[in-house]
Image: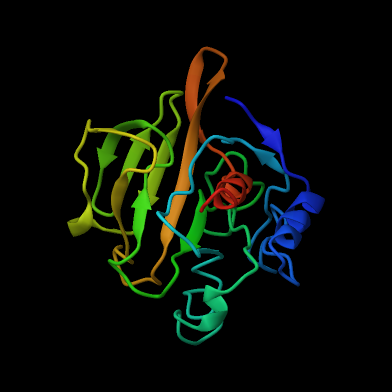
Amino acid sequence: MACKSLTAAAFVALAASQGHAEPHFHAPGDLLENSGEGVKSPVVFFPDMRFPMESGPAYANSHAFSIGGAKGPEGDSCDAVNYSYPWRDNFCEFRRSDIAVCSSGGHSGQDLRPATCEKGVHWTVAATDGVVSHIGRFAVTVQSPDGALHRYVHLDMDSVTVAPLDRVKQGDRIGTVSNSWLTEIPIHLHYDIRQPVQVGAEVHALFLPPYSSLVAAYEKLD
């Protein structure tokens, strides 16, 4: 697995190159206050991946701790603040306690809001070539040739274009962003990646921080 690092200064430079007065991206691991302890590593674990939405703009932030979220300020989850830059990492938020690389609590991936607060409109796409390894009640998982598991959660399952064991190419449509879950939640894509890692004689699929890889992929969108 090829990796590279994207420093905090590079995040600012990315925004400056697009002519924006404010940075588009908070640094990796910079979570909302009192929402958890993030992973501050700038490593881009997946430098060749495509951004998992077909087109931008998109907004990376917490669906739970932002306005209208279950743990955030009261208000409408469609508030314009939730659909604006800069991006913010939310890997390792206080959600669960079994994410190996999170020091306390843990959220296994990154929340991504589409361009507008409309469900069933904005397409997700395959971030890599691969095989559809699982389709569940709310999610689709694609396994890339290196074994990484790319998971798309909270899709409109009626829109899903693939079936188990289908082969997909990078950029192929998967399904549209929605808010499917046990109860209604804000409209967003939860995107996470598990990478097989050899630990002694065993292989474990570990959730890796996707934020820096998503920033790098987003910058490549046309």
